Structures are given as structure tokens and as C-alpha cells.
Length: 288
Image: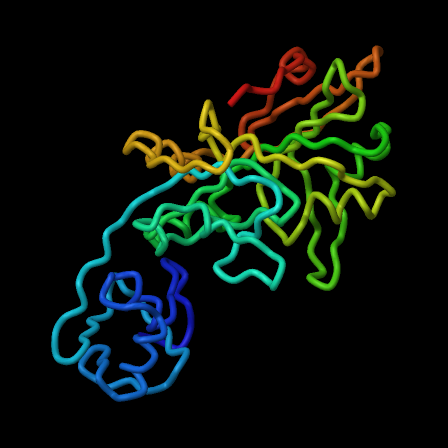
């Protein structure tokens, strides 16, 4: 237990650590904490909101060690109309209404807003969630969007260069912007960051409105034939593939439009210069 989140792993609230272990629900955990029946590293803890590292801190409840939480890794096909939260408003539905009972302790790797749909990764493994969501690990997310009118070359350049979002005062970039050859209003965009409503807000800044936003893939994991509203467990191989981008060198991407007005994408390794022929070789977006 420490005063702040460590760089090498996330900390969570003590009541959540207890709930994630399957010992009891969070509300009951709060009661046990308030009653002084929970100890962390041998010291009684009664302060609500105390944070712990469940992988290293020794937690006991009523004198017994906290059970080890079962770790599982899920792919969920989120429908539009649901919030990525355990608590919705009076008229809001949450994704937890659709998740099987045995997976209710899972937390999402980032969020999709209420109006968005697509691939959502969830897990009970806090360290895994930390790795796949932290910007330094460069796990890409691929989205399909439909706009109210087409992007211009200047729009694409701004999205690639970055648009400053407030109040975070952060520069939000799209690492790829790929046009649909058949529908000028449809694009595939890739993000390496995950600011709140980043795509919608960035496009609004340059005068566009997102009409449809669907996450096609989270890292190398695509939806495949998973029906909307359904969940499946990731395989061990998929979990390892999802973590593998952390070991890959970061790449820079830029897009341009060819003489036919189609968007082309060019990738370049940060430490390995490409030849002129390689820089201008047309790439096609990968199909998840």
C-alpha cells in the first residue's frame, strides 16, 4: 500500500480489491473496512478510498487472507445505446446488464461512449488493463466512422498533426486516416491514445460531425463473427498478441491523397529510414 499509483502497476480501491476477489460485494466491503476488520500489510485500515496493489499488498479480512481473484480476459461486442459503466442514469442502460453474471467483476480497458459500438476488452486483471491502456505501450485501436461530409486534405493533415483538446490541454492525434473507396463519408481511423471522446471532439473542432462510430479492433483483436451484445473469453494466444505491441518499436504514420483523391498511408520506423520507394508505396488498411 502506498500513497500513489506506482509506475509499474495500477492501484485500486481496497473495497474493489475485496470485491474482485469474490469475497463480498463492494458495499459489504465498505462495512468491513469501517468496522476495522480489514488489514493491509498487518495494519488495520478504516479509511474509505484507501488504495492498494492487490498483487503485492497482503490483505486480510476478519483475520483470513483475501482469496486470489480469478483472472479472465474478455472481448465484448458493445451495442450503441449502452454506457461503459456499472451505473447508468435513470434512463441509461449499462454494459453490465449484458455481461454474464460470472464476469461482473471485470473492468473495461478504456471506454466507448453511449452512442458508440464495437470491440471492448474487459478483464479482472488490473496489471493487464494497465498495460493495454497506458499510452506508452502503443496499443492501437481501429475505428470505422461515418461523417456528415467528407474530409479535405487539410482536414486529414490537421488530424494527423494533432488537435489540442481542452480542458485536458492535450494534443490528440490520429495515427491513420483511411478513406473508403466506395463511400466518401466513411473512414477508418487509428488511435494510439484514448482521450475522452477523442474522435468526436477532434472532428468537431474542424467542423465535422460523427454520425456513426464503431470500434473495429482493439490492438490485433477484431470482433470477427461475435454478435452484438455478446461476450467471449480471449484465448491465451490472443492475450499475448494483445500485449505484444508493447515490445514493438513505435512507428510514425502520415497520410496523403493520391491524384485520384484517395487517402494513402505511409509508415516509417523511427530508427530505420526508408527508401524513397518504400515511403511512397501504397498501403491498404488491414482487415481485423
